[in-house]
Length: 124
Image (cartoon, rainbow, N blue to C red; front, side):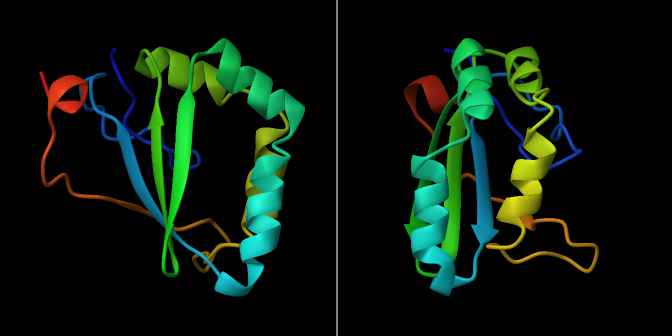
């Protein structure tokens, strides 16, 4: 299954081949752990529907004060279509209250360097 690479708000990614998974790191304010988890457990319906319709899969893992996002989509175009939900900007604004942001208030995402990939995650 082709996968997606890139999640940054207003940035599509590095135009990697569609076979790359999203591997991103967010830093969060740990004292918001319950609110962050609850927000994602109750993901806003329009966002969830857009992700489902465009076959986007996502998991977020907690590692200390870091959140590691792993997401896939069949193609870059599917990922981009899933991001066209008008409410998504409000979601990012809400998440910015729970996550570490830069001077402009944008959520800080760091690209993770791949150490190993096999099977569907191996670059073509």
